[in-house]
Length: 552
Image (cartoon, rainbow, N blue to C red; front, side, top):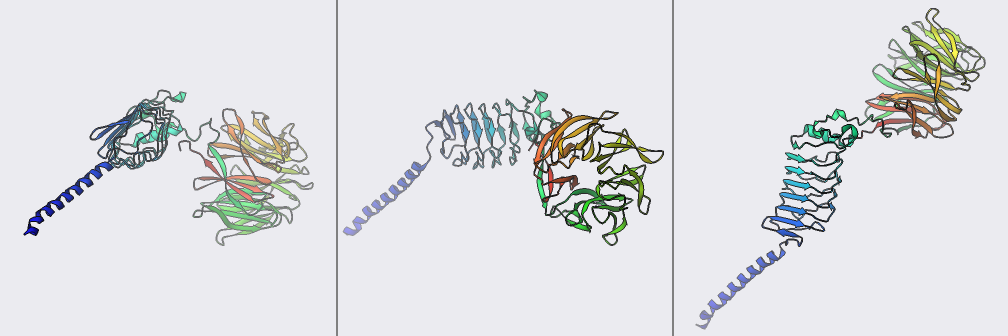
């Protein structure tokens, strides 16, 4: 009987223990709940922080809107709100805020409204807003922003409203992407204005067209292009030529030490120049391509054993020897130039021997025959074909006299000596170029001053001098809309110059390290631009011409 009376007391005691345990668990959970930071005021779902020295790391879990006002921190660090994932609205106003770091808002999957207004922000990381896929409204209004990093809004797919008013935007190439984005986005962007440069002052950014930004050819920027090393070839060479045949582009190098014309083609898969074919010869100094009526001829100039002309046999896919070149006239070839006059094809070989003669050859449908010999015994080192006042001319450079200018006579169909270039002794070669309608020549001197001269309608007048230190080539060439000239050196770095349209002369642009350069040739393949550089004492080099788009 006593045992039955004691049972209810034990049951009550057990119930008491269970209730006490539950209360302790609840109290423990409440104790672990984040408290409202001391610098903030919190209500049920809102927190307002004023004069905060740092961004607090945690807030009550039911806070869905958070505001910072007159705070002292100057940046929003990475993952500042990783512990408050429930936020829907975040506001910063009238703070000392200067920068927003990468992934500053990572871990906010529900954030819809982000207001960063009336602060001192000057820089924003390109990935500051990464991960805000639900963001609807973004305001960066009334800060000190002069530009925005490219693709800042990438991934913000839900955006419907962007406010960028009250900033100091400089409407240059760095902001071109924003104009393109405004043009393509479905989000509403409040009207904003350019505060610079002077040409864009107070223009509406929303109304600008991407085409109005010249981010490649800006004259005042010296670093828009460069020649970057692309491929090194394991042979020395003394000349280089680029040419088209059929629908393909080729380059050919003359290798004097092993006696070979080396032909290269572009590998569209590996994106390199690879071997295509060779012509074996002796002491090869020039391999000059000439295409006539869809036939490819190669003039192979040699120091020993005579020079020859080869023809490409497309059916056999090889080069065959077509004819020899008179060894009594061409004893020591130094340059070959090809040209057309009145639909007829010619080439001329500059002979630098004491007994030879610079000679013009003409195509007669079956082969090439001697057409005219030009001043024998003068040891010519270079010949350049050009049109002066729409009339064909040749300029011969010689080690024994000043450069001589010859003009084509339509009546006799021969070149007549016209004049020479005064006070220009010791010129190794002459190469020409045009800027708009103006004709210029680059004159190479081995030691002393190489020169740029301009045709004034009657004669060539000196425009500019460049110091030469072992120079065998001063080659002008164009790449796209850029005009360059490259001055080789056996004793120092090769100097690349670029034409400055405002100054009307070349300015120093870049240095290249090439051992004993002898020739240069540009070539365009697959919308890429390359510069081929022969080297007499080192590896032949290929450079790529890179264009730096400032909008990136």
